[in-house]
Length: 499
Image (cartoon, rainbow, N blue to C red; front, top):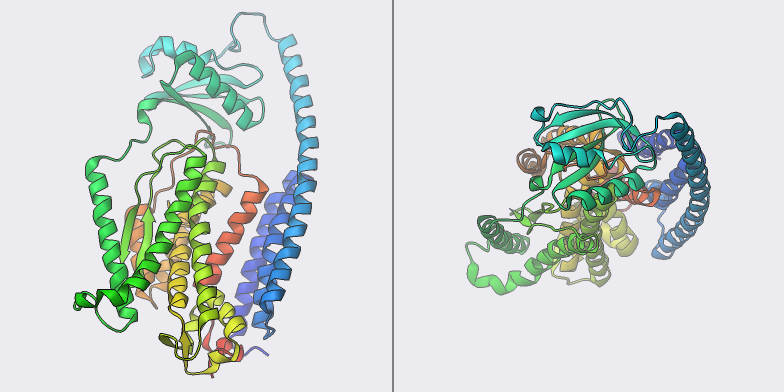
């Protein structure tokens, strides 16, 4: 049975888990069958992990075979639901297109005949209030039509213009059509955004392409190289501290720290390769990574800027998740391999309290090492420490704040408003946690000064990522919490971690 001190913690975890699922159901319900099927896919992805951790908290240990069975079953159900969702989605699309064609025919029959695609009565601004030349403005207005975007008002905005009106189709298809028409008329001179206005209605924004993100300058590249060198140094220093000596004071012992330092750098590089591969797939340019040195864990990760405008929120999600996915998988493989290779006489001897510092690390260690965790000191392979540090770095970058990978994922799935609120909430949590660990305070400072702002809007900011991406995003956030959330000493002891 749970003790009185453990019950509130377990109850909180359960409430948070069911709160996330309940919130997902609340958001999905207005979309009918499509929304419910998408929500069920999210549930199917999370159930194996919730079941595993729930049984673990109850003192029931699931071995590797059981874990694989849960994952295989959930994957099968997920694929089945995906097929049902695609079938339902195709039916909905056909009905939507039929309705749109009928509306367009009615509007064309009732509208006055003229040679312009613009509806009669469209607001005209005086050329002098707009930065866009009048000739260009007229050509831009000519791309709109009854079957794409029915304009009602034109407003000056920065160096471009905002076009208010009514969206006449699926946002992604409309954006592709309008962008292609704009490209045909004016080449690469302007960029067309479709975003949500303050009143919740879609608007079109056209801005000159000179506002596009710029490539890194030479000084910025030099600074990135300096940070890389600093990160290599702090990774070696972290390795030295793990080996109980100060590398900066004993540089002649560099051969001893190279294996662990190289392991830390491998995780960091794998993370950046994940971003780079998906960016290349979507033809998006990325800046060089600005690595953030940290003596405590080697590095906080890296800041990578987009040097291209993102076409939609799906691309933002893919690139943002790819880094933590690759880095996290490499770290997890290192951790599991290290646990399997651990034996009496392994290089490191860690107090068993080490394994209660993370739900994820503790559960995996309990499954693989078993009763060995009851010893005051546990002999472990160096890969365990490297994998654990990699998971911590990955989890820190998955926090839903600003331009962190987690913040970008939340922005891609739920939009800018919720991403802004998540950033504030994350910073508040970090400040509270910093009362117990200085690492949280350091990370909060990094976010506030370097990454608190949201990512700039995509060209198509209206279309949301599909259900599969939303489910993967929830799973990533869940694993982030499982990595950073510790076990209480009492619960850890009852589960066999400690004496």
